[in-house]
Amino acid sequence: MENEEQCIDSSQLDPNFKYEIAASPEGRGIFFCYQCGTCSASCPVQHAFDLKPHEIIQKSLLGLRDEVLNSKTIWICTTCFNCLERCPQGVNLTDVLFAIKNIASRDREMPDAVKTLLENIFEMGRIAEISDFENEDREDLGLPAIPEEPDVEGIRKIFKKTKITELIEEGE
Image 1 (cartoon, helix red, strand yellow):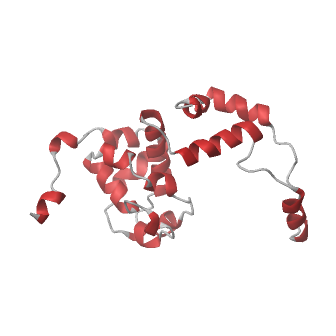
Image 2 (spheres, rainbow, N blue to C red):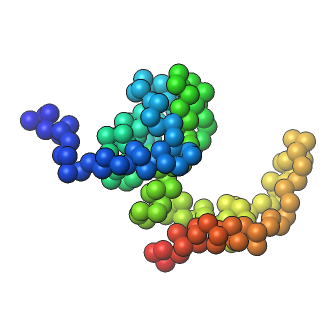
Image 3 (spheres, rainbow, N blue to C red):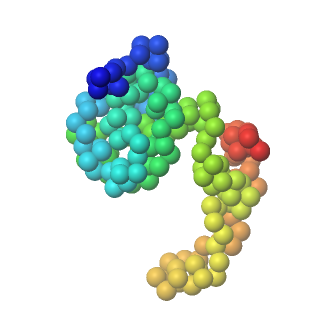
């Protein structure tokens, strides 16, 4: 039967999941979404998602915690804010996704790509090295050069204080 796939097993539901998201300042807007789908229609990368942005909200509100936290959608969002600009309710979906990512990074393994970015920031102070080539391009565009040495020690202190170092050290 086709409809069996769409049935939700109540044992899979976490009725407190939506409240956990909303408990953070970023997640408060989750309750204002009325599922119009404008966020999904506005998203430039929604074709790469396993769940559309409005589905993330819907499944979060239903309590489908595992499905939401295991979704690659929460990690692929480009933070372009098209969803916020077009949302008739003013739901900051990008912030809601940050709240969900925070929960996911506490509860389970984060994707290797995200871990690699964090490791690079911890080691170099940025996600990629900046060469003379990039600074020459910036000069041609009338932009200031990127400083050669970011405050790596300051970044490491922040990572340690916020326990990000624990997240990137897991699984090594």
